[in-house]
Structure formats: structure tokens, C-alpha cells
Image (cartoon, rainbow, N blue to C red):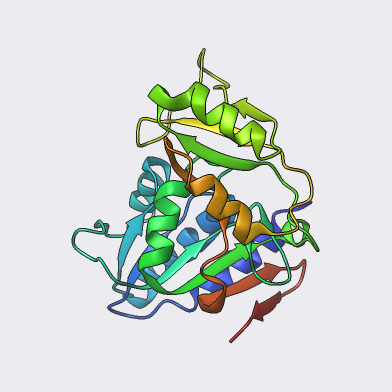
Length: 228
């Protein structure tokens, strides 16, 4: 797939940012197109806003585009968050976390009044089925793996590509990628995973559907989906 659908979605999201806003900035390639366009708007239009990044990667990219940054301490309530997703179902439930930033992304999502999810068409599905990333306290890895197996998963410790050993998140934790197959009741599964001691957060996002707008980038233009 070409980059055009991602660029179109990212640019549409960037057009929704207004002067003075506090804007959550997610992690991932489609969001980076939104940052690219926001940087152009800062330089060309004098747009003024503050970004709250969800990862070191997002912060590094945002600075490259001249976006002023702050944290949730300074902005506990955000006007909008722009983020991506691994999968989106028709009810606007999400699976996120391929970039291992879903814990901070969920904090930012919770703080935002409106959440804009930017995706290409391959991310829209009838039923969520992608592996669910689970951020785990390293101390509790074995116990959490056992409990996730009892829920029907096949947990796999995510390992680094250009380093030996496990991926370590920006928060100093490990990631278990959990294949549950087709997820018929994502809300119930999210609740069950969250109840396991040692789990920091999972990549199921089911509590925010009413404030989510999904922008699906196409080769030409975008398709916008929301429940409000």
C-alpha cells in the first residue's frame, strides 16, 4: 500500500487543530503525517498549540516539526488527541500498542475531550482479532503470563529487533503480545485483563467510543466515521 491513505488521514486530522489547543500526539506512522502537516501550519499560518506526546519517539518527531511540547501535569485536560490504531471495529473499539506506547496513549485518550483516530483501510475490521499488547511489570511476568493463558491467550514476550532481550517500554516495563483469536466481547476481555495484578495496561480501547472519530484515509480523500 502506498503512503497516500495514511497521509490523507493524517492531514485531515491536522486540519482539525485550532489555535490555543492542547493536543495529544500518538505514536505511529499515520500520526507522523499529522505532525508533518501541523509543522507546516505552524510555519505557514502561525498556528499556535501545545502537543502532549505519548512516547519518546513522538516527542522527538514533534520537536523536528517545531511543535511545542508539554505533559499531562501541565495539561490534565486536552482539547483533542490524534492517534492511530492497529484495528478498529464497527463499534469503534480499538486495538492499539504495536508501538508499545498504549499505556501513555490510553492516559492521553482519557484526558482528551475528543479523540481522532487516523488509519488506512487495512485497519478497519468487522471483528477485532489482532494480538493484544499487554504492558507488564517485569517482576510479575510469569504470573501475568499464566493468568493470560487462562483467559485463552497465547502470550509472547515481545523482543527487540536491534537489541538482545525484551522490548522495554518508555515506562520501564515489558510487553506481552496476546493472541486471543477473534474477540467477541472486547469490553469484557479488557476488564478481565485489567484485573490481573502486574498488568499496567492492555491495548484494548473500549471505553471511549462515544468521543472517538475515525478518519480512514483512502487513495483519494478520507472517510470519516463516528457514533456522535
